[in-house]
Length: 130
Length: 334
Image (cartoon, rainbow over all chains, first blue to last red; front, side, top):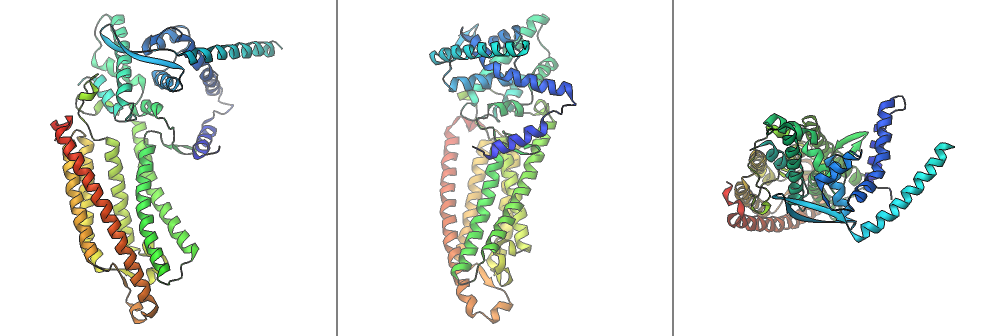
């Protein structure tokens, strides 16, 4: 449905869309677009084993998936609200930390997303190779 | 207070109330962990500047808080003018001002219509449209300037002096007056003052086509300065709370005093019995206008009683909150 937010966002996005002559900026924009979709998959996959926010961020970063705290924590909250993650506060090393892990629904969804990812990867591979 | 506490304190005021404590606890833990890693790496504790640099890298609290907003609504014409954090306050101020104006305009036009005056749809439409345009422009400009100021000063939080934040015992934290609420009150009051001044010199803003033969009754001139004084006092109170958000009791007491003063003015208004009079020239031909004038005054009378009922309910609610501040954790605040 076309609402005010959609219109405003579209106007804003179009206005801020990098021009084709501005190559580094355009590349960065497209790179971010590409990463945005795969980020959820990476976070869900990492949370097959329980982790708290900071270690999760480091684990992602160590595997080449840099993510800002301002992106990660709201994403974790959203995934938890959607029922894909479970969380609990627990003390570790004398500090209270919030631990996240995949919920049964999250595990199920992750499997399906991974299958989808592999299919996309295979298709892309064929397209790129011509 | 160390930079981390200052940062979290400023951030906490911008977060959605329902999740505030939870988010702050989690972010606090994340930042502490990063500082621990950095300390291990350097083999010494971080100095204040290093802590500030680390926090600045995480971004302005306004930007960080925006990511947690459940509704990412914003105002954008080409570029974003009002972001998701300020947007709910912007809508609140705009709605309040427009509702008040529309309420008054509706009474005037209804009075004119039922009084036998011909009211053309285009006159009603153009009057309402003019009000929307004026209020929208004024409120949007003010909020856009605030947004711009906050965006241009990403390290502004480092200079703010606020009271200590007690983590993680959030329930023991003293309650505070939201700075955004104080800013909203200042803006709403400023717009109300401008609007009052505009109506005073341009009666068509409120009477529409009837401005040619209707005038405000003398009672409005009698209560003009007391009304301005109450609005100024509210702005002053909000400014004080902007600087001292921990003065919760100060807000509670002042609000009750302003409520009482407002109720007194309403009582004076209700006692006046007529609020709109005919202009000098119209007095010579009052035959058709007299009935219409009577209807307008009758509608105003009912409207004032409705306003009084709302004001009494507000006052009671403010008294209840004041009693709570006496017994609550904020009692330490002035």
